[in-house]
Image 1 (cartoon, helix red, strand yellow):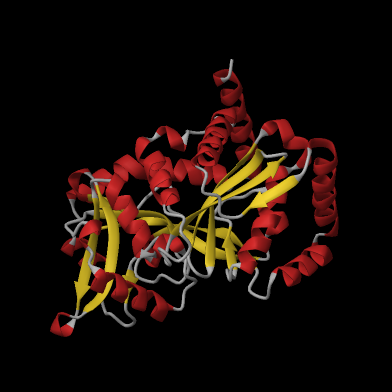
Image 2 (cartoon, rainbow, N blue to C red):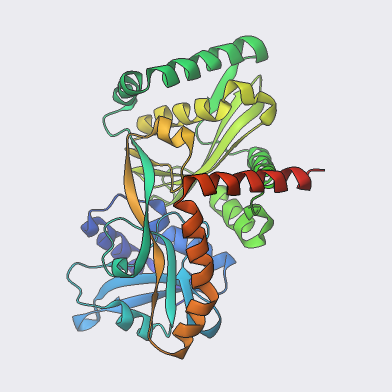
Amino acid sequence: MRPGELDAGHIERWRELRALSGAPANPFMEPEFTRAVGRVRPGARVAVVEGGGAAVVGFFPYERGPLGQGRAIGFGVSDCQGPVLGPELGLTAAELLRACSLTSWEFDNLEAGQTLFAPDATEEFDSPVIDIGRGYAAYERALRAGSPKFFRTTTAKERRLARQAGEVRFVFDESDPAALRTLMEWKSAQYRRTGRRDRFAKQWISALVRRLAADHTPGRTPGCSGVLSVLYVADRPVAAHFGLRSRTVLSCWFPAYDTDFAKYSPGLILHLRMAEAAAGAGIGLLDLGRGAAEYKDALKTGSLRVREGASVRPGPRAALYRLGREPSRRAHSFVRNRPKLAGYAQSALNQVGRLRDR
């Protein structure tokens, strides 16, 4: 069915199955995210898996493309993916794809602990996390002990920012749409500056973010709510982040900052303030998302593992999929796994970004 056709009973059962899984309550795995994607992606679908007596025993959100090629829901921006299935279901990946008339299903952030599609993964990646389950004070003590220079430098920059630019103010859940527009402009400029594809140039991604941001009422959507956090200096935004939260997990999604204030590291200040506010709101985990970055290494307390790959049913269309996708995937993997080569690639992207700005 289409995501918008899920009724209250489906939503309740979805939540029950997620609770039974024992996995962190990542908002990308909640029905609200799938329904939001369904409003901006015509190919979005949810397979409802029934067991004995027509009892619902699972859900499989996906996007259907041409020739039956499938992808994870929100592929390209979703940081946690996979079906929501009851324990010991006894279903195979091929059976599920056949029932959905899919020749393949591609994923790039398969959730840690997912077993159905795990054998089809080609690579695994760390997704750094910040554990604040024992409160922010415990996290801060761990930072002081494990990364004393980083913590000392970041807090000193915050004090210097206040002295030199004005009062520093932080809002954890900002409702001003102007702040979201500013964040998206910063992020688009960052994509261009680093030679990367501007995600917000895609209409469906911009529409998805705006839709998720529009509902910021606490408790209204407990599984997946948009949270816009902003660091202000003298009422001027200097860093911002838009992410998704459940009751216990904040998935970090789109961070950016005003480059005029780069010397103060406003993004790092913002993340520390976010961790403190999130802990105060009852959140126990910040998922920083897959991808290497110095700031993630400095902030993290551990990592989850996510997988990339594709499950492909045998047949002539499977060959078409491999011809169309595998060469690109292998090339990216080859570069990623060779730090020196990856450094050259990043330098080339930065040069492309500079040329764009001329």
